[in-house]
Length: 193
Length: 194
Image (cartoon, rainbow over all chains, first blue to last red; front, side, top):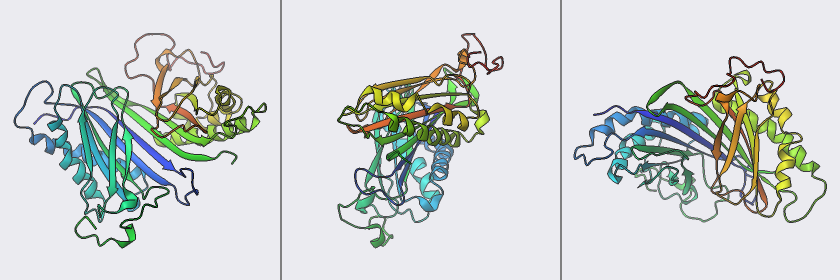
């Protein structure tokens, strides 16, 4: 399979103190990492693409490691998500190659991460924005942790590129009060509750 | 602190390749943006000194965030810039009050010196609008390789009664500079121009 040719990486770190309500004693922090790489399958239909998932593993680990560092260590992370934007000369299926290397990289670094990593993907042009979903790392039904983070770069992805994204968060929405399963009530075995 | 901050975001960009050429070491830019309450939203206030003080606070906070995000010493910072976007219940002059009188001095402490004018931009805007922060060499405004910019946007800011204030810092110029002019190596850094 082809090499991963990296053009650019970008990281965003957000600290949210409040959203019109009481100021949080500990600000919510969210971080996103985005890597812009060449799409080795751009411009043609390639039947066999799965080998590229293996090639993407080091990139997944590198992005995930950086996010953990930005947020102050694995013990701080309570939510995650992933996404991909495929440049216009590629196809949606190429974005699906990120599921395993992106998701398992985060789960390898985070304890008690039994929940599926929520994801989104699309084919789009330069400057496109992607709303990456975030859910609790150990129980998908934890309602306070349903969130998202918008990512994108003004100069990517070009037609023959793909943007691969990982996001992590340190907790619940800053003024969460919509009920549902609470983080302290989870069983943490099936990844759901 | 005078300033009421709702959120802070820091973005880092690293360019490893440009038009097929490897960039080694990667060029790196950081921008830190604070979303603050506009104390004068919805009314005309003649005295803007509160915003000037907020500018001083943010010059330090945001400058330091950028330098930390880049993982560099203050001396290693090479260029900088500042911008503000005012939500619809404010006025453009609010951006000027934050950016111009007092923000620069504490920012220059965070990047260790900085003889050159800090390039700036300002606008009125709404949540999700793009703010383009200009970049210029911190010691010598004529260093041509370091004329650049970085875009920042937040989907949820600025709300009507808010102001977004951004500071950008780099440790490098453009990835493939080749339009001549004064270079980083040649800059003297005393008069802020050359």
